Image (cartoon, rainbow, N blue to C red; front, side):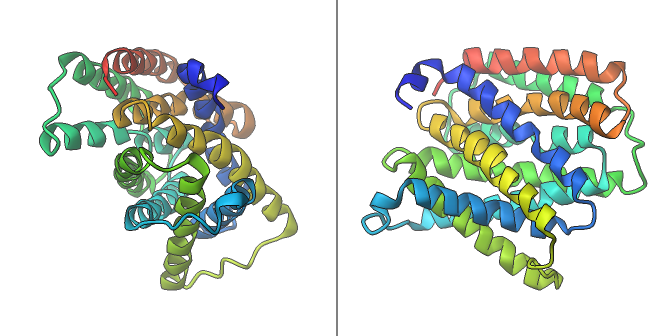
Length: 284
């Protein structure tokens, strides 16, 4: 991992590719509840993280901040997966990745962060490009609700990254993520009870997709974000997934024949330029 610290932005790109695959998997599991998918993703990822960091299982005690981040991460995934089921992959992926808007707002208003015109311009440009990407919002009758859930999942992720920025100052990556994922799984289990959803009702093939979600988008994608949030600003880390709608939309076209118009290409290009501006000008 030390070698990779010199290539932070390359790592962010790898994380972007990894997390972009999760929306496609949800499409492969239309019969399962969003909560079931999210629960197993988090539980298996937690077990993987515990296996990697087993040497410190008895010496590290998680704190309340990790519990808070875990609860919000659980809600993030439950909201995002449900959003994908209700609207297009492009719309869910876009609105589910506007966390930097909320992190920057929090830092400026509550942490008195220095006002940066360039960062706000970059965020505005990224969001404008993202809006162009989904301006033809007519995927289904449930798109409006799906889009609202996606926005709420971005709020939840903003909280996770802001708390993680603080916690990761003194805690190792896997010591943090193993409990983060575990608490998220517990949160999702209680959500399933509230929804009267049986998270243990699935097929063997479904379980294979759960393993994939835990290994690639979570252990690779999200762990890179939590690794880099220690040295990069929460807004920078949160801004990178704004490129997810582009990758997700292209995959949605080739895998599920979901239409991808000129809005995707133009909006995607504008979004990437905005993300680049944020990364270049946002301090850690």
